[in-house]
Structure formats: structure tokens, C-alpha cells
Image (cartoon, rainbow, N blue to C red):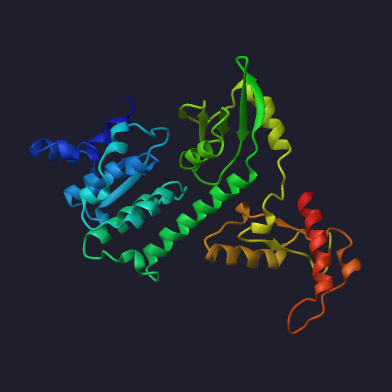
Length: 328
């Protein structure tokens, strides 16, 4: 058995079942320099098990070190049937459970420590913490939640199922590469949206399958042979400008000197890196295109400075070039 499969139950689900000297010895085995190491799978049920055990033992956040185990989702099926956090620790608002459900889908490694720190504060004298919008932990928690929600909306907007034949039966497949671990969270919604045909959603991390009766999950990996051709076709025909009008952030760059120069190069690129870094973003996760391609300056000239920005004709001209660049 994998070592993580043995450690997680001791620290999470089994703490309430291990008593006395035996429990103290088991807990001590997983302490490093005064820190308690806990292993958590990337799902809400796993964090619930671990958080209940930590709260029951009175472990403050400063003495807890979280380590994520991949490929162990659903290891303790009974965890999903446990009572809500309100029975384990009084005063936990329902809003926190909703936030946690989204935040656990984020790829941020520090999300587990953040969730437990907020949970600890909620149950140790700060029951209205989530109403403090200027609190650093609350701001970070809501930022992670919004990132997951945007990723989910992008998936729903871009998802296209393709029909295949599997074992003589009609099936539908789709491929998508989300930024975060959202498949298990979004799959029940897909079942409600597409209940009348069987489908499979493939992502690098997780596969979801619906056979019109049951929703199941598998770990991601190489595509099965029966689905590869249609998924590759769907990926090659996916619209590169899908949902551009609803993008949360649009970066448009044009060189004022040399139109052959890439957008946001040189000093402009260095400044962009600084600004994105301060906002907690990375340039690699953003799409930066030239709005007008070659001929931009000759056709529309340089925008004259005005008190209220650019005139409508110039804006409309640039918009047309942006759409052409996005499609290309």
C-alpha cells in the first residue's frame, strides 16, 4: 500500500477513533520539528476529514503542514456521508462550505493551509470573519474562488461533444484543458445539462463518464484509442476566440515603432511582467495578440490624444483588426 494511503487516515479520519497513548504515538510519528504533517487528496471530502481531526485535537494552523496526495480522490467514500462541519465545530457559516467547495479545485498549493486557517479563525472567536472584506485571508480565499468560477464558465462556453461509436453504441466525447481541477465539481452540472446521451469528458487530470444512469470518474492520462480521433478533431477545430466578449482580462499590444515587433516586448514587456506579478497573474496564462496585424499604422494612423480617449471610428477600426488577429 502506498505510504500516503496509510498516513492520511491516521491524521484525518481516524483521529477520533484512536485514543490514549496509541493515538499520541501515531500522531508523534508524523511530526517534523513541532509541525504536524497531514496528507490531503484534492477534494472536499478529504479536507473535511482532515479538518475535523485537526479541530478535534486543537491543532493551531501555525503547527500544521499540509501535503497534497494526487490520485487518491475518493479514498474514503464514507467521508462524503459525514455530518456537515457544523456538527464538528459550532459556528461555521454555510458560506464557508460553499467557498471551500470551489477553492479546493484551485491548483494553488497553499489553499489547504489557507482554508484551515480561515476555518480555525471562524471557530476560535471570529465567527463573522467572512464579512471582513479587507482581511487578507478572506480576500485571498475569495480570489481563489473567483478564479475557479471563471475557469468553470470558460469550460461551459467552450465545451463541444463529438459523436463516436463505442462497442456498437453511440457515445459522445469532449476534450478540454482547464486551468484548475474543476471536473468533479462541474460534472454534475453537465449531467443535468446533457442527461439524455452518454458522454465522456477528458482532461489531463480527470476523466468524467456519464452512461445515462451513473456518473463515474477516472484519473487523467493518455486518451483511449476509441476516443482519440474524434477528440483530436474537436481540439483542432475549437474556436481560439471563444467567449472573447466575456473575457475577464484582455491585453492588446501594438509597437509604436516597429509593427513587426511582438506585442509587449522590451521595456513594455518588462513593465507588463511587473504589473501582472503584483496582480497575482502570470503572462503565460494570458493571451496577448497584436490587434491590427501588419498595416495597422498605415490604415488607422496613430491615435491622437484626446480628453476622452480614442474616437469611435478609430475604435471600430481597431476592433475589426482585433477580431481578425484573434481568429488567426
